[in-house]
Length: 112
Image (cartoon, rainbow, N blue to C red; front, side, top):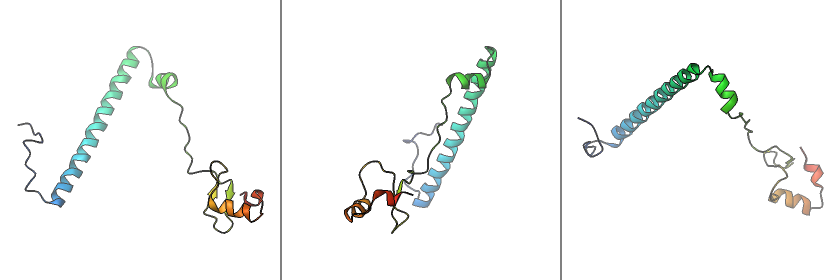
């Protein structure tokens, strides 16, 4: 018998049981997706090999370059009263920068 949402009676389950069921289903779904991906790569490798290519050849031709990810904006200016507050100099000036400038101080004094 094939299980479908209409043949599955979940009304007798409690919250913890349903959460456990969902967690198990998500785990199994991830396993199936990983297996499908592994099989797809095996098939691609076989086709590439039959045509005289390696995976590296295909990656050089069709792969996208990996871009590095930055962990937040570069600190161009730092608030001396609160070093956790930074501004990279782009976009709208934060309130602490505006207050600094209105006090007649220089933006160069905030450079980190």
